Length: 237
Ligand SMILES: [Fe+2]
Image (cartoon, rainbow, N blue to C red; front, side):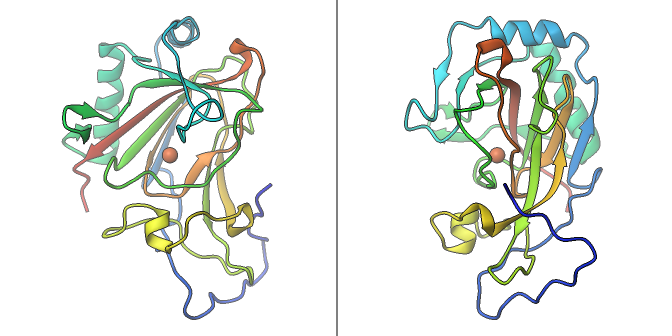
């Protein structure tokens, strides 16, 4: 669906006068981290999520932008503490916190998200710098489609030039940084795909352009189940 950068081909230069993003090559250990077999009891967590009764619906059922449906408290406190200790240890952040989206209301994090094949597709984006610096996903479908993990993208100009992939202050998101409402799929090169694997953790800097690579399944237990996390963080420069 998304073009990839053709190997061994010299790409044209970015045209003059067009909006740009900075570029930071996706690099394990620098701006993303993958750990397999992360949770001690992943089936317990997956069953807890599948059996939840308090689901909230998103796209295409409501005006929410996030897809499928979500339920809170995917991980219990000790499981979340282990994750946050890991996040601090690899990123160098000494503090993780959730911003207030309105007085007394914090961003939903530690949510389970269940999305079927027909409910959404890849949508490259960055998470608002007002809301988070780090995001993480734990894949919890026991038999996932490997290709339906998470992808990282970089801007593709109409002449084929490859542009940047991060939003930096003072901008907070792509719309703000590029001064566009939305971009078509051909405006992106898919640069790197992290495959979906049961009990794999993917942590990444959320100002990198990213998206779920795809969704799968029709019946509840066959759909793409993930636990999602967002944090503000005092990351070292
Ligand atoms: Fe995101």
